[in-house]
Image 1 (tube, one colour):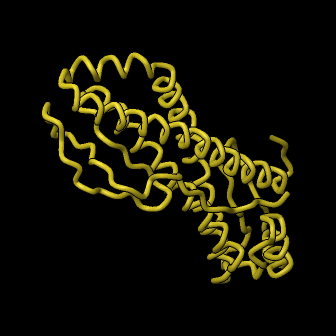
Image 2 (image 1 turned 180 degrees about the vertical axis):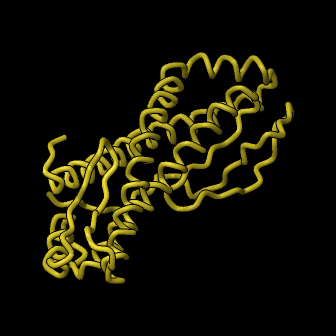
Length: 224
């Protein structure tokens, strides 16, 4: 089983955004031009503390998953380098290469639950093999974090998407001025669209992490 690495970018997240901070103001905030990094979320404020907090929590959680997914991809890239494999190689190819290179070291993939590692039954471990072990450890940590975050994030996103009309009503009630309502309603709609995109990307990150787990389980002689 091969693992396909790709970098996802949220459409429409490179424009101006207003920061979601702990310091909340009841007056409509000026757009401060805070831009998101490629792949991460940035939301616009809707001037209702509870709603802005919801979007802020989703932003923080998604961006954490994005960073963990990036760390997972980086660990795979480094493992391929350490094992002398091509960028298109699978994790199985990497481990097989390492076993051929260090056949005398009696190494194997060990898995316990969602935790996997590359075990070497020798007291003295060559530097390149130790590097491979380190990358497997980094890969395991990032993979578990991606999966753990997905469940929480999907629940948060579904809650927001299912209450769109209520959120709009609360925003209008808290901002009675017509021009404020027009501007903030546009912000809310854009945030909802961004959240919908984040939902699909989060699912893909989870699938990528699950693919890693399944392949490592196979290498350990297990079936997930």
